[in-house]
Amino acid sequence: MQRPVLGSAPQVAKSAFVSEMAYLVGDVEVGERSSLWPFVCLRGDGGATVVGDETNVQEFSMLHGATIGDQVTIGHNVVVDYATVETGSLVGMSSTVQKDAVVESNCLVAAGSLVTEGQTIPEGHLAYGAPAETRPIEDDHLAELDRVQELYVEHAETYKNAGLE
Image 1: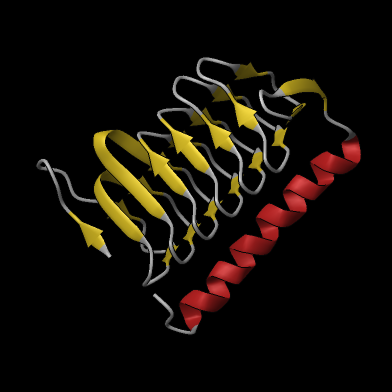
Image 2 (image 1 turned 90 degrees about the vertical axis):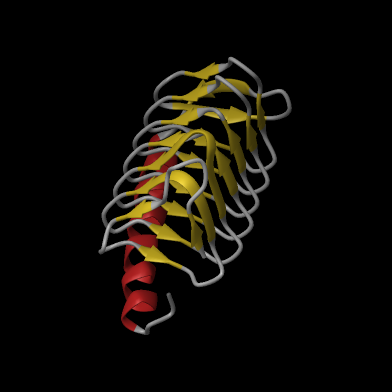
């Protein structure tokens, strides 16, 4: 469901897949070949929420005033609230990225982690724990980030072709 509010309406690329059970409201932008899965909520009612190209936002996640780069994976049950996740990163299941935090490019936020208000996760780092600590990411993790992101681009095309929007 897509709804306007406060004079802004969601803008979704034609090549994107948006589940019929996703909710988008207000100043929301979704890029090319991205996917929003069931029970995802994107709110643009206090600042824009932008999802880049070939990015996937998985079930039960909520983005509010968030900026999400290209080729990002937002895992199941994630909250990104007035924060930024840059290109090529993955935010694992049940993680939270709080206000003014930045997850730089090619990072992995481990499942269940808390990136605290104003925290920056440096490019190419693993963030883990609550509050999140960091260390450089390993090459096999970088390959997994790419694999998951590419898999969801394929899944989205399959669902879109099946008319599940």
